[in-house]
Image 1 (tube, rainbow, N blue to C red):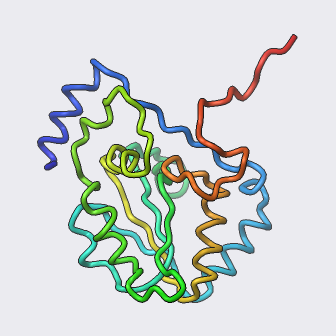
Image 2 (image 1 turned 135 degrees about the horizontal axis):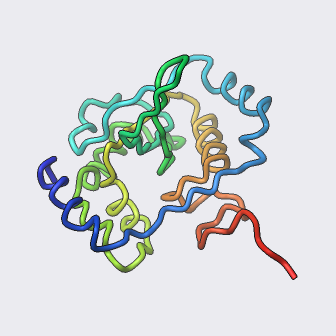
Length: 200
């Protein structure tokens, strides 16, 4: 779907229908633990830094043929200027994944994007207004990887054990709404839970 078709679809549906909500339920305990967050960053980012690119259907061919961890990150154009320091832009992690199974030489960042995601990214945004909630992984990806502007963040790692561990920790901490595996019991998908509830 090109930019003109995308904008036409937004204007067509934005006042008429409601999209299914994405529920972001991060692990408060883990993210409030500053020491834990800093130690994780030091452990996994000793040798490499995250890279990012605009997530488009043709991105796969330019990605490295290497192992690592990746995320799809929605970054709306809302920017808040501050009196001091640079302006801040909001980011939401939609999905966390890994490439680099033990003994899987062709399981790379590039191949994973080409095989699994390129067909969904930049697809038909009108799927957002489908009345039926998505039930399966492919349905979730087909619906929500159409969000724009969307970025693809990746970190190259060699050790399959490190890759698995970092993916799991990111999923547990961030609880991305398009992931279903690897979440803690308090992070399962479902209706949002009110922050404060009257009792008695």
